[in-house]
Image 1 (cartoon, helix red, strand yellow):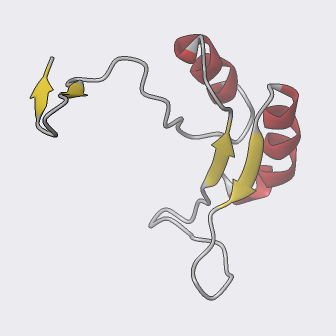
Image 2 (tube, one colour):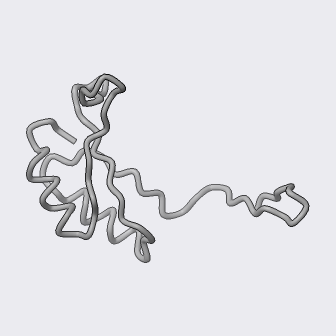
Length: 87
């Protein structure tokens, strides 16, 4: 998200039911991307409609990208023997 949109994006994400927090470096400073943007990590719990939520978030002014992946390329299922299979 654009650094100047931090406050409005935080407010809007809370209205959508999220718990946002700025991604920080170990030293406590905000993590800044190579383009000068910041990352707002958000907890939503179980998301029943990921496409709809992603659309609402991307419409927030200053939000550049959303990291909700509604259709994974590969799903792994763990078997009882500890091995896994790709579905």
